[in-house]
Length: 439
Ligand SMILES: Cc1ncc(COP(=O)(O)O)c(C=O)c1O
Picture 1 (cartoon, helix red, strand yellow):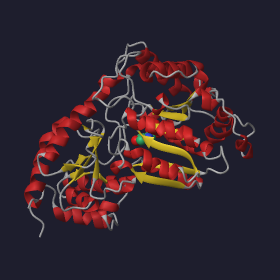
Picture 2 (cartoon, protein in one colour; picture 1 turned 90 degrees about the vertical axis):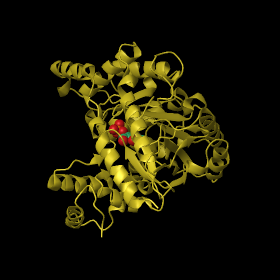
Picture 3 (tube, helix red, strand yellow; picture 1 turned 60 degrees about the vertical axis):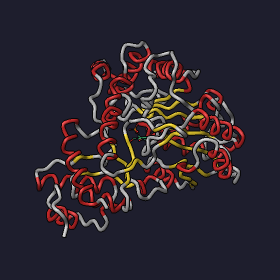
Picture 4 (cartoon, protein in one colour; picture 1 turned 180 degrees about the vertical axis):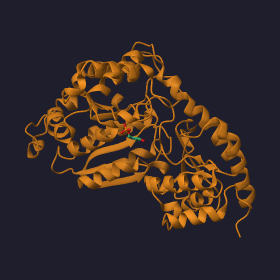
């Protein structure tokens, strides 16, 4: 018999059956979302929803105004250049200098249909540069959709969970994979979705140096740009800067999403920055698929063109306006995003005070930052069991299993949709869970 749980167990069981879910813990993010929607509707009780990584803050007015103005000026009827509008390219280049201290020409800065397209286009192009190297290496845990992209593209991938290979240990592990000779591309996110680990400069240097040694392109996914709130990166042109592999190699593509840093997810506009050296480098093997062997030319006119012929026109004006304000020091996007970190600090404490542990807890010897995600486990539970059990307590999350993590006991919790006025409820439910399961 189930104990007196915050959510009526009969309703939970009925909805699991109705949704034809055989194992809640192994269900996809969208299946869990639907299950929780149904339970909330039936019981009238609100869940602590930590399953989806949706931005929880409002889009900046400056972006909306610029986009409306662009629409009024008639851009909707016109194709944008595939490589993006010049003012946006210019502001991306300034942003790279101001917040990462790297020099890239506007030509090498491109808008994409979200970082989602940036990843897709990058995989497509980098795995065709050299006919002997067709494989993508994922430094896991990671964003599951990127593996799905490789799958639909028919691109083979290799992977390892970095949990046991932090600091100096990363070198040997990474080199063992690269030495096989089939890797064209390395991908990871930093800060990391789902674990919120951030690679240290030492680790980024290892990645950069090995990328040079083995002629591999690093796709650095900066979807949560400057959200390592342990450092204040808010002043343009002044250190500290966002740590990046671009400080250690020219073999890079940086994906920067406007979804989380600028709360502009709905307009599907991201950007990628290709190093000038890579943009202008020739790879004869590209000629198998493209008219040009120049990497940048192949990317723009051979990959982005047939994918989507560039991006929607008006959001480019929105992003250009935010970036201009950010570059000019008039809009502090990091201050806005800091709310995620503040909430994470409180929520992590609620869990750890009640028997839970943080799974990915360190960057080398430092505790990880508080940010958009954190990972939790509870003694005696596998991740999929924990997810199912927490549903009866009105808490939803996803299992780390689906993110390429080897820590099968863990869950990913996302803070963005949890409101501060739900913290009392969260505390009550987590306490009840602990009361029912400890010892
Ligand atoms: C690591 C990572 N990369 C890329 C994306 C997708 O970003 P966009 O909305 O710009 O396509 C996300 C979104 O959750 C993400 O977490």
